[in-house]
Amino acid sequence: MQDNKSLADIMSSVERTVLMLAVEKYKTTYLIAAALGVSQPTIVRKLQSLGIGRRRSSHDTEPVCYQG
Image (tube, rainbow, N blue to C red):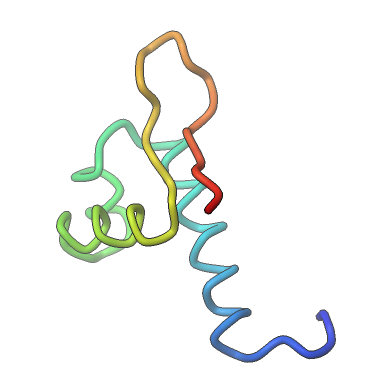
């Protein structure tokens, strides 16, 4: 564990990792929501707030991640 990180920072990092993996595995926000046991609007809000976007086309192999 890294020093000087708050619980909120650690939880945000874990949430980001889980959502990035889910975006890679599932094709829609509906499937992500079902897999994680939350509503689809919750997934959309979390992806937007963390700057994570879904793939733009079937030719892309990596999720879009916006760092801001």
